[in-house]
Image (cartoon, rainbow over all chains, first blue to last red; front, top):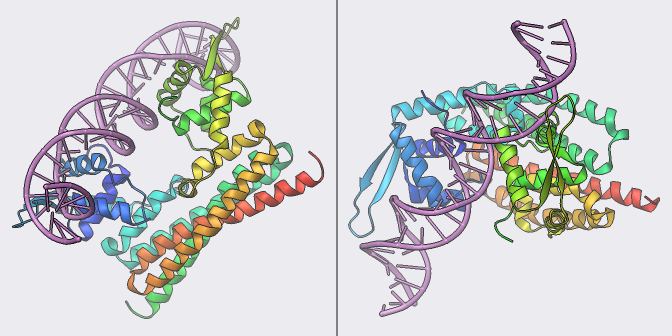
Length: 185
Length: 185
DNA sequence: TAGATCATGTAATTTGTTACATGATTCG
DNA sequence: CGAATCATGTAACAAATTACATGATCTA
């Protein structure tokens, strides 16, 4: 396969895989929900859908409803589902930790596409990446605190706190999944 | 003035205002420090510097050092400093809260450009935006928890935790500044 | 002399933004 | 009828990425 999909393309692919949708539906999802924070602009979504269609990852069917204007409803193809799963199953590397947006996007699609087992594995891997990374940042920061102006120190502290918050979320998510796992589901 | 500056342009302007730098210096800053996470690619930085120069916000002077290759060292012009201060002094609106990257970028340059007083005002405004916003998110989430699949709930929980972490940082930064303020500086 | 590092740049391509255009239908 | 909403799209532009090109100097 050629160049990797953009974040927006991954988001669209993940959404139409969960349930078929028109470009308009997808725009509404992005404009209404706080999640993801993708652009709901037609200039972004319609071209992205066509790119996905050109790569045969999704497939649009014109629905001519008596009355309203015809909609183009997209579904994921087998190749699209396969590509999505490849993306979701990618082991989380160290650099993913600094792009948590993408991580959360993957997480959001993961359960439906790969199942709880995979989600748990993913979260545990993420947890260990974060747990290993944060102390090195903290160490660097406390070592250099004396020589740094407050604003620089605080700006870095902001970043580290974000990672720490992500780690706490990750642990809480692991607890949620292991609790559910014990009683079936 | 015309279109607003891009985040990268603001970052470059803020940096060269603090101390004059060549494109190469700036690339090193982006590749070496975890802060900001801008691209260190020449294809991003050199064109951005030229755009700033074309708008007369920065000014480059060729330095011909005997030995090494000549460098183009950029400084902020008076107009550049004015533009930077306008950007820094902008009141933080509700939507800034969801783009904390930009907020932190502004914060990082603020003390040197506008002084501690402004930083404190900025932090306090940010604190109240966050403190007002977060409960509405939490309320929405707890109200809908029962109807949402775990993964969707957790994805939203991730976002809210991030805001909460930002709020805690904000309060800690306020304490830092008010503590320093009391004993001079 | 070969390779690393300093230093600046360009070109092709991709992506997203903003703004506009279009057309049908429903509702007041 | 006029406005809102459903629904799809295009065009101009801005910005970033990747990859390449260039050339000087320092060092092993």
